[in-house]
Image (cartoon, rainbow, N blue to C red; front, side, top):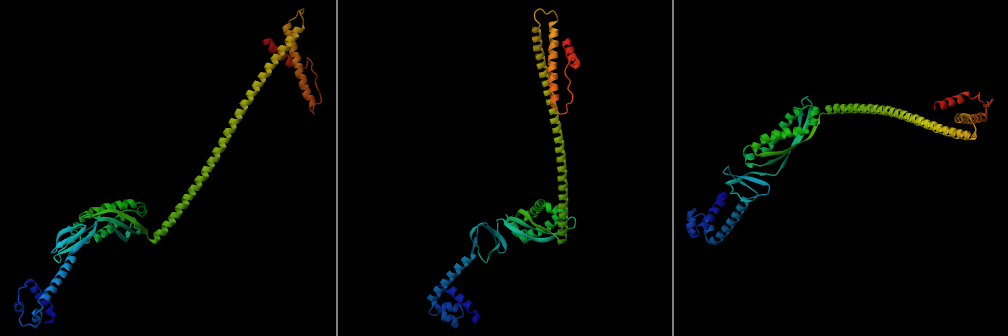
Amino acid sequence: KQSRRPFRLLKVLVLLCCAPNYSKIGAASAYRQGDPFYSDIVGGTKPLIRKKALKACVVAAAWYSLSCLQVVTSGDECLVERFGKYNRKLGPGWHFVFKPFECVSFHVTTREQVLDVPPQQCYTLDNAPLRADAVVYMRIHNIEAARYNVQDVMLAILNLCLTQLREEVGKLTLDESFSSRERINKELLKNLNAVSATWGVEITRIELQNMEPSRDILTAMELQMAAERKKRAAILRSEGERATLINEAEGRASATIANAQAQKQTVLLRAQAEAERQMVEANGLKTAISIVAKSLSDSYGAGYDGNRAKESVEGAIQFLSLIRYLETQAQFSSSEGTKVLMFPSKNTLPMTYGGLKFLLDDE
């Protein structure tokens, strides 16, 4: 009986607030006349009870209003269900939800979210084990589909990404998997968007974070890498030596060609200089013969009957030949190894004299 007294008190408060014209006896007769609990309440305390009941009703109404107030921040959306059935969608702002008849069944952000895919064991096309993980960037654009088309949208996307990641890694060999990250990302993005479109979710980007092979494969890869580096170093060393030898051979060939060209140019220049020297000497000799011959011709006088021109030229030639011969003998005499000197005569210069004479006769 004592446990039921609060409910009885509530009934009396409602009766007194809703029916103020009831008398004490009428209120008491409506609820078990003769009960001392009701008699104490009704008897002489009606205004006080009304005031307290009114305050209680105001406090209860305020508390109910505050409990029914739903605040949705920017970038978030909510779904409201009435009697367990979808009723409306709430955008950013303040909204009133009539509890307990209505409730917020789904509260989610429409901003881009990041889903971390944990590492999992995968096998490549050549049966090499490796652990791969990824990061999924997603955005919910239709919260009704995300709520009612799938039970747990985040778990569904996570499991779908794990399955597709294992499938894409299994299509590639171990070496291809490390160099085909962009290809795997594109395939995962395409496959996940094809499925998640019915869930109201858009996958904006997928990035592979790590692809770690087993320890044995890492050791084998390190050995292979070391061998490749040694091979590359040997190739580069041999190519450098070959380039050095080729450069040295080309340098020697270029030097030989340049030396030959220089010698050729030297010989040509010397020949040209010798020809010019001989020409200059010949012109000088010709001039000297002409001058000496003219002097000899003038020295014969007007009464000379012989061939003056011929004899003057022969005399000039003999004179110049004698001078040259004396110059040569002077050079011979100045040397330490000279023992015999030949003095000039007409018989000792037959070749020079006859040759010059023959040349003069031909002109």
